[in-house]
Image 1: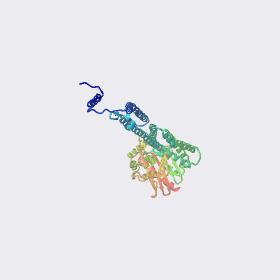
Image 2: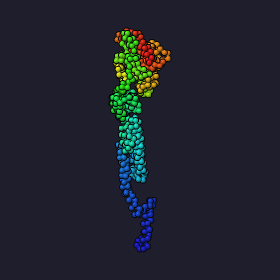
Image 3: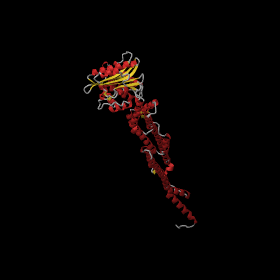
Length: 516
């Protein structure tokens, strides 16, 4: 067959190729036609994502590093590791989180990670501010405590300036530590001063306060401007300066000031002592004749409250006290408890009753030790102006040496108002002396012949070394008489011999005073 190449043959061939084409593509997806407008943005997005992610990561890391640096600063300046632990953990969680295979930090600005960093930053600021507020409160409390223990002396404005100037918790902690250390030191010094002085009165040593008051009262009553008054005024000026000293210096200068005040009191008291009459009226010829007939040594002292005179016989002779020293022990204990504003402790009262009423030696030994022994007793004797009395050593209180005048001065502390013993303390001692047992009822009590007279007494006797010391001291009031008396005797051949001497002397004093 001839093939025609004319016009009639072309359409046929073309249609065949089309049919063949349709046949060859039957069953395949239709190709996606992508225009240039779609291809360019897509390429830009796909090609730009790495840069976008890197930018977000860099910003995120910078903020995280800023938080780390801030925490390091905070920790260095007083924020504890415990306070920061939760924040560090939260940051680690945010930093390590992923969305699928994409780290959160790659798209931090659009997925909320940036907001979480801001929240952590706000929490960090809160930790700092709350810690600062708490530390300021603690600093103010430390300062208030310092003011309290130091009598309100520190400058409040200075403290407030220091607190306001502290810009970190660590700075405030240093203030707290410094003020707390001062409180501890002050409390330690106060405790030492309290032990030394028998207590504190308005944060000042009680014994210095009492001695200063006692000396002030004596100066007000002083009759002249002599050397004793000048010495007293110098001691008062020293006490005024002492009260403004730092505690450490108060402790170191305490003993010196107490001695200065005590000496000034004794000197002024001696200068103002009522007139002394010896062997001119009370100790008349009948009195001296009787004592000259005795085979013992006798000293007598009498203070007559009706005329303010003190009478002394054989004034310089010293004696072993035996049991009359028990009144000194009691006076010391009462004075010590009085400086604290408290009554005698119950345990000491239980010993004081048998010591005075029954003259119990065991009770006396217990209370002698409670008082502090010879050293403490000597301190009281000095305060009382009993300069001729020396405590027995080695616990031998019965061998305390004294004079009749010192014993009368002691009795005056119980009988009449003074600055060492309060009214209640004096009444307590006198009540015990008024209830001595029958075997103790001699000496001073033998004088009064009137049933209306009250007698308070304490006796003592001691066979040492071979002959007897027999002493009687007390207070008599009634039937027109008001006096304290001390009768001390040594070299008695027996206890009864000495008792007889003391009895007779007391009777003669009672009779003569009634004639005046």
